[in-house]
Length: 81
Image 1 (cartoon, rainbow, N blue to C red):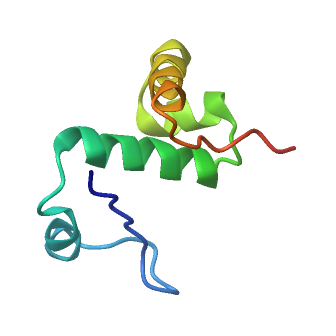
Image 2 (tube, rainbow, N blue to C red):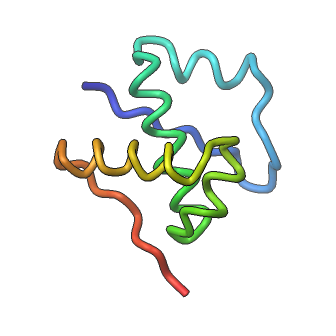
C-alpha cells in the first residue's frame, strides 16, 4: 500500500496539476481518495460536517468512509474544538 502525502510548498496556496500528478503516479484511486479524505479531515480539525462540505460529500458518505478506514486500522483525525 502506498501512502501519498500531497502538501503545498510553504507560502503556496495550491499546487498546479503538473506538480501534483507526479506525486500521485503509482498510487491507486482508492489510496488517493483515502489520503484526500484524511488530509481534509485533519485540516478541518476532525470536523466531519466541514470536511464533508469541502469534499463535496454527504456527512453520511464521509462517515461510512471513515468507518471503513478505522476498521482497516487506519488512524482517522479526531475532532478538536
